[in-house]
Length: 201
Ligand code: DGI
Ligand code: FE
Ligand code: FE
Image (tube, rainbow, N blue to C red):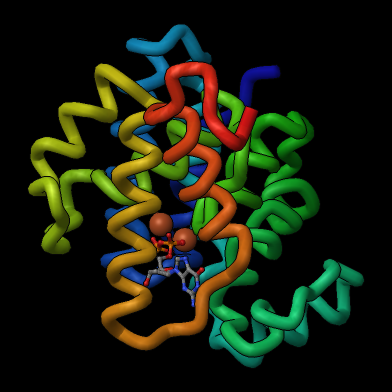
């Protein structure tokens, strides 16, 4: 199904704070380019990218109460770190408010913050584009430009590097980690470092 990208973009522009809107545009076009490289739909990538943070204009308390109100399941870590729920609530709004029907797009929005093991190509693309879009400037190891190049050559390795950097950042800040963040890291660590015969197989 084709969506009216211009219409979605115009609505998102009204809904989100200025910086968040331009971040979303950056994610959308970065994701569309990655989609072209890896044989995914650029339209789906644009749609998911524009909408991935569509719930991010709400406060943590509002996000939590919206999730409760709409019967979106909340895990203990999400209860504590409610901003994490902007991903699941965003997928809900994408469906209910923006009329997005494709589960592929909705799940890419759902998992954009923590990732998950064995992501689809579109899920990987949105997870990565969110981290590398041109307005991002966070320090990383290896440097962000190296991770950016990796995003256009090896999706699994790029996910591993982003998950590792996210875990390192959360550790350094003493921020509680969502178990899914660690599972993503372990899965992609095993995937890129396994040569077929270790304890994971
Ligand atoms: O919404 P964005 O800022 O564009 O990006 P995002 O949805 O990936 O959220 C990024 C923030 O999420 C960043 O500050 C790191 C944080 N984050 C990622 N995984 C976890 C996490 N925070 C906690 N508490 N636990 C996690 O597992
Ligand atoms: Fe986000
Ligand atoms: Fe984002």
